[in-house]
Image 1: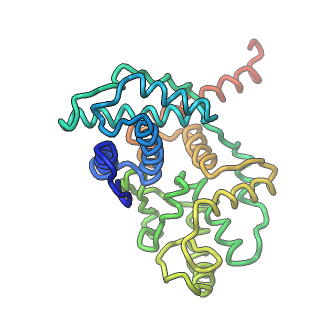
Image 2: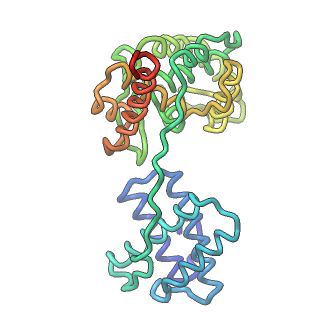
Image 3: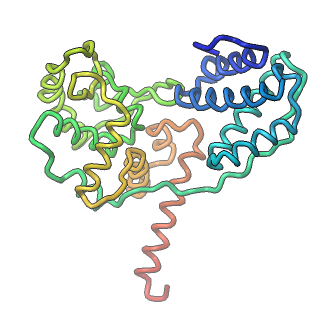
Length: 307
């Protein structure tokens, strides 16, 4: 495993699988980190039992690992992710001829309950973005971040990853690197484009001037020390301004969901929306049609005299 001394064949197998996920599958760094934690815990559990080789793992060992996680108070979603990582590991080892053992092949992952994503209304979005922001470089930065999260539907990691060379305001696009570092162009128009133009013309230079120990960066959004903003700071910023606008627990992803919901309600084509959001599979985008149908039903029930 990267950055870890290989202790045994199990460690070696886990390391090769994580490399495969990163290089060939192009999974995001956060996903790889989650799988690394899960598989490190799995390997440690097996090692306590004296198992140091993938060929020595039995179905009962995996069942006992899951039971141990449950007793440890881990959430069902965390256990499901770990199981997914374990199944993927053993399947990969068999495909590559590293192992002949498939102890997880008959384990079925529970079907995920479909959950409609949270979103805010158009009126709430207006209240959020039209509120009075601090008359400072940081205030202008925060307003611009919110405008882009809602106006372009970016993930928080994509917002934080934006660089100056990714901005094409004259053409009306941002170049965005999404999951697995996949590149796409996202339209930026209207108030989001205006806010970004103002921020780049004034506030960013002021924030960059505060760089002390932080090396110079070409990131679009800078913190108070002139370095690249973090995802944690964007989360905190969304909650703070959301609360000021009467929206409790506002999350950056809620703004992405709201963008998609409002675009679809406004007549956007599903395929176009898929491209803007960077969804590899249109079925991921289709969840927003469920939201739209729910809204249509509520409007019908409220408005039709014979409803």
